[in-house]
Length: 368
Image (cartoon, rainbow, N blue to C red; front, side):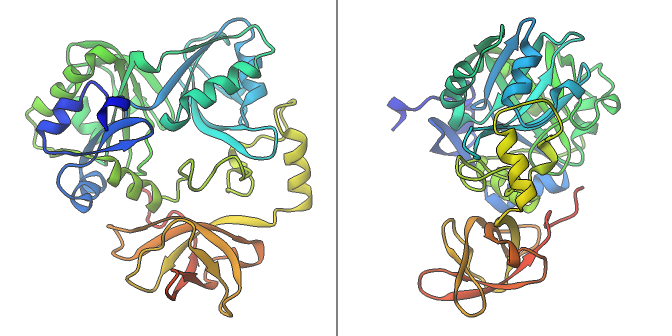
């Protein structure tokens, strides 16, 4: 198994901590260390640390870097100021999504940006960017050079403040700075993450990743921190209604159908799929990504058919889990627009039986 899989520099650390390692996006990654619920609640209540060094990073530079980015992403990067990040997606030219991403403006010019993409899409995204580079932009894949830890939870700021000279109160949501963690300099400290519980993401050189992990876990503190695997990362993001590429969004779903109109700036100058999306918005979407809560103990699974109360198919499940915070099964899926409003009763066909559920607004829990 491991012969064909990549691993992060923390692989041996994960194994020493008793992590269950699984293949994920071409990497061997920790799915959990103790239990999914325990790790999930550690993030919701205190601090959890994720090794997410499998994510991809591209540097986009040059005199036409901003023009190129504006052409390929859905959001408006011209609004970024130095030290700010932005969530966006790559429209695929056919009404779908190549990937979702975060773009960082690295300095006070319009000539240096970092794009962070999903691990499963690194090669695909890089090819897509190169094939659409009609500008004088230099695109460099630096994924193998970067290590990334996500330090997430309501006490993350207090915990990290004891390790850095940077005033973390000044690093707001989707803002970043370059500072120290312990004696590691030039750390990108980013007020981002995909858990909904607050915290930071720390970018370092790959060779410093193990040292960064040890600095965090060797610190003497009254604040409890825990290593957290990708299993809890998925339940955390789903409780917030955040999309997972390959499940809730992909090359067949438009950002408008996925509820990502807020990162799709139709008033900016021409970008890939602008005409399609303008027309789709004018005509109205036929399906919509929604959240739902299940009135049963069974957990909804990807591709289960969503039905109306008469048993007629109206959509399909894209993500589902047992919510550790709520103690009930929750999920997301696409349904016909007529069934997309909260409180509408639906049924989920598990293959053996249909279980009752109700459309729910997202996030499923209040953002802490």
